[in-house]
Image (cartoon, rainbow, N blue to C red):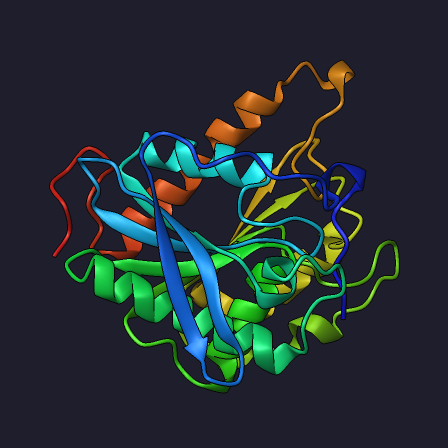
Length: 253
């Protein structure tokens, strides 16, 4: 089941809580317990994105922090959270049922802390896939769309589409942000999967990016430029699915 990010996304110590981040406790249920969350809500927030981490790093990994900051600069609040195995300091991901229950608990917490904001969910790699698995099994209450920061369609360099079969049962808009060098999502295959989903799915290809959205120096692009592209594309898509308002318009109802 594990979706491995590249070597940069390993279980190294996470950064401390940053300015503006509000720690939250998320109750997943008696048999699972409580996990940690971080809410980053800018003053001009007009949407919330429930953002799950990938298999090899927690919610305070540098990528997670950077995308949350970039989204905040565009008025999108984020609720990041830990899966129970990361909370416990383990490396092996929890069973899918536990991961999906955690997704639901995080979505419920987002509705609780920001009930007036349009709600989106998804995440990086494994976190995005577990969010779509949960949504395919039973709708995520209040969620208007799913956003994937590198959907892990198959194990590294093992072309297959089985992991994407459940997406046809999601039933709400989906945005796929995928790098052209992503070893966990062959571009031809992910394009085909999104095409079969029809207008429900939007695929945005990030030129030169790998599964962690890193780019080679010879590309002439910087990681920061890629981060801005991810944030801008996400904000524009959220605006469109929240009523077609442009990014600088009033908060959608």
